[in-house]
Image 1 (cartoon, helix red, strand yellow):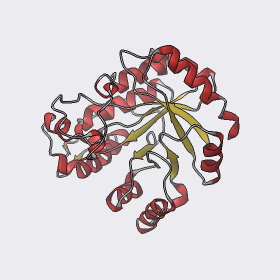
Image 2 (cartoon, rainbow, N blue to C red; image 1 turned 90 degrees about the vertical axis):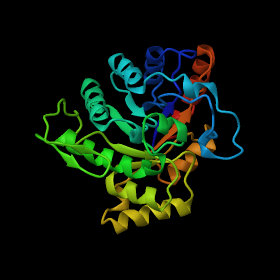
Image 3 (spheres, one colour; image 1 turned 135 degrees about the horizontal axis):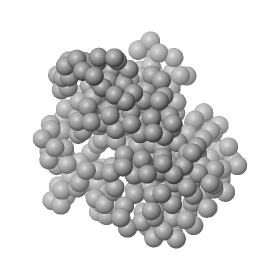
Length: 281
């Protein structure tokens, strides 16, 4: 089982280049950055879309652009895998996003992992001129279109939400046919069907229940896919020896510990503490 870390990279915490070098030197497998284009200050949607949620932490509206930040890390590391955790694909232009993914994968030598998710902030989506209710269907079409862009010589796509005429699109990703696509978030029936249809892995926040795993496995079987081919992971895994050993025994392929978006000294100390768990896998 691989162990990585994720952090909201902001202008008030550790420099991403320093962090990437330290994460690699300590022996972690991967480093992941989330994203929000902005957070409307009306704060109409509660954190995570959950009524009664606590106030949204400041790092949500201070994040660096994840592809720019990961590009800086790619240029200053050699073996560390780099992930978007997650990329809000449905509120992005699929042509530009496909180019960012392919460029980062090529520049990094094939070290990129494309973590994707639907998102939860209604007004953030509306500011992009999009229908929040259609975000799941739009994400699906964006991913399917990007796969065409990454693999075709003169790709095109014709869907309800995404339409691309035959085009020349380069660069292509270093990884073939493309970087792994990993879905974040809980798996209800529709999400499970999407995981089975177009994802290479599933990585929910916190350890999935046996029931959730069964839903995803059933969706894979219904899609004619071997569930054992799906890579499983956990965002925000508990950083304890007992948790690490339990998740490894349950067949998780990768777990991620969360780093605080705090003073650089706090991030360094936390990372060193996590590194003591690496030999548990």
